Length: 540
Image (cartoon, rainbow, N blue to C red; front, side, top):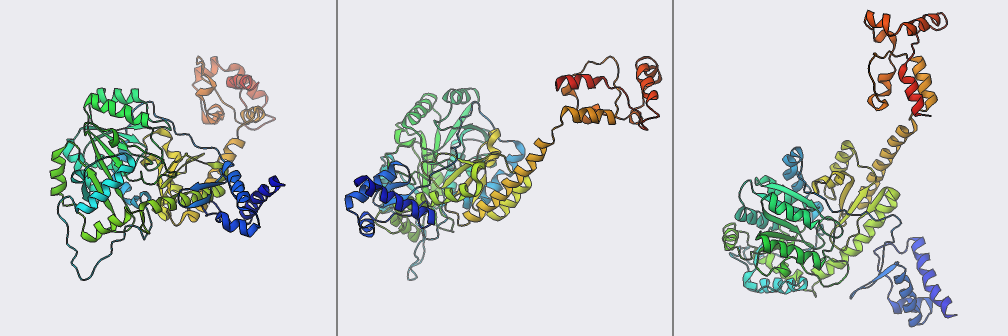
């Protein structure tokens, strides 16, 4: 009887899903509310929720309750580590800067309520020179402890633009024409800024278990790398979680080769599950890593950044002279976001992002079906998805014309050959349903154009008939393979290819005689084709 009651909770859940009353990302009713609704005991409902959680239908979120999960019906996309260092093509490099900035909204949180500074009309909005208010830097210091970074507030610099801080770090620590290694896939602004500043960018693709460290060491030594740029935890676009072992190995390499590095961290607070995280900076004993973190939103003046310059005192002077300080309202908005008790805190936003990500994944999968696969993300703002076939240039242009703020093409994020099949979709994008529908139409068009190509492959009978209708002459003395010819090259009419007289007399006398015998029956002169025997032999 007890098993039947537990199954009653499961049956109720499946019925709600089939009717659309519950969708991925929705919050489940509280245990007590559902127990009262179904007239079951609290323990029975708890056991029913446990069964649903074990099957992957729902998930418990800390301090939030249970939420409906998206249960995928397609295979996961596998991220493979690159076996060699690559560079972006020259034509793409020339337009990287404009393209990266035009897609900025697709890389940040698009909420209108996040980091919204409240302006006091009775006070003037004066800038704050230097590092920022001590109270705000203390709040940032407390926030960084969640990723195992223990830093004194006096070493923290606040600013209004993480990209501006990144630019200052590059100009301070490297020179024009210096080689810089960037781990990809990553925010395209990281690579485009380096290219715009005249640095030689080398990229190494990371897989689900990190990068090929042997290739990384070879590149650092042989290519005279002057700096390494790391995307941090749950970074755009893959949302991968970096293992502690990979972090330790990288820090050991940096310390041995004495190479400076920059860690770009905009998403470590957006983990889908609460877990203890570490970053590259967490293990940086020699202060070789410049840590740049922050929060970015779509709106103007709704960004906040912090930088840990490490051992590079020259960078502190560059940050001071760049005048990147936050105003008083901006610093207050940042301080509120770092407080977990506030309505628009980073912690609450992380829970919202997970829910939105589940909804977005369900919408895209329902629209695209088996033609799409998702990389297994552990956090972040993005769905990193792979299409079975890359979109054409015309289709991609139409897609970006309407959804530029919601999607970024994969070839901007990685220099790997297969990057054209990948797309980064922002889960906070409001037009996700329209984006999914347009993608579905394009994918269907690509599939329909591919099918006739496969269906039109010639059979041996078709080839024999075509050769009979379109005679061909072959020069003597040539030994060629079938792969050396297109079908149209093999089938040429006599009048289209006149031959020299000596070849007609010597090489093809028998062919001419056979053609004259059949002239009365068929107006076009049919010639014997020596390639025909070879083709028929290949087709059995």
